[in-house]
Image (tube, one colour):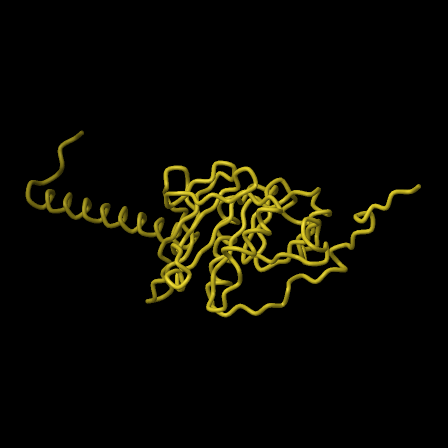
Length: 241
């Protein structure tokens, strides 16, 4: 008797929808994970073994159907190809990724509650996502939770972690809140942090810091030149060194 294998004819990514088409109801759900992706491109510029998806469907075989994805606001996988050749991923399909499960998933709570603290948490635990982060800056009092919660999977169950920024050694990054300046507006967002709890700066911040250092060096050089000129005018030529 031939045993039927339900996973022998799994669909390809080209045959699957790229998301669940659920519209976001606040800007954070797009901006925050895209900022984390943008920073990773800068932090890990020389690495090609990672992928960060934003509002992208994850297809897996641990749920009711392999055709029903889970769609985090953001997720990170390690040990996978950064790019699939010259083609960008439309979705993240585990059976096309050597069954590499994302190590990190991010959900941002919105006005319309989406099961972040129960239904989705159960899905991610069953899938085996090591770190599950829930960011709830607006509705945390309503939901009786903290604005930022980091959970780690321990023996199949998520345990709430303590500390912010929280260091994730398996990833080599920390996660925490910080301020983002957009023009004259200061926004709270999520950032990556290093092992010393120092926030990774954006390329714009690094460039501005370098400009400030050059301007300071130029100012100090000009002040020294002016001081030497005053000395020369008062005492004549400078003595030989």
